[in-house]
Length: 175
Image 1 (tube, rainbow, N blue to C red):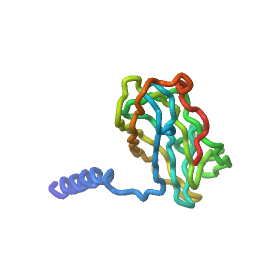
Image 2 (cartoon, rainbow, N blue to C red; image 1 turned 60 degrees about the horizontal axis):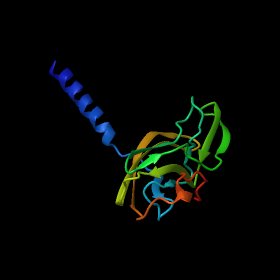
Image 3 (tube, rainbow, N blue to C red; image 1 turned 90 degrees about the vertical axis):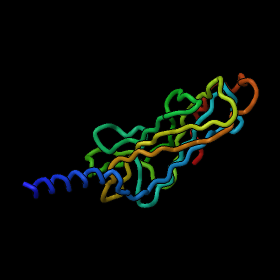
Image 4 (tube, one colour; image 1 turned 180 degrees about the horizontal axis):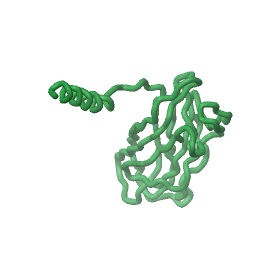
């Protein structure tokens, strides 16, 4: 009976330790605000960039359901509000035998644009926290989907919102 209890205890301890095991990181995420002179009440864009180690890739924001996990980004905190759909360059599309469907992927460096408006009461130094969820694969294997937090620090420029900058930026950012 004691050996069964020990076995159960060892199993529980091992299960608790699994989340702390470090998976290799093949993607580095960075983010910034597109307009460094953005004012409270104005629209801008968060540029979220993935630098992916070869031969690995991640999946697009528009990856169809039923296969690999699509990349998503959400704002966790900060003086901005997402407005509209994020933008991305055209993904590489190919029939993926592992998932038996067409996959949409990126390798190398890719920049996504998240249109946002800055809170009308924001002043001075601000910090935005994003959560990115993504799946990394190569030609023969995949790493389970990961979540990472990315932080952006920027200063809200002084002055009233400019009428020609009220709308969020929805153009494709440069990688």
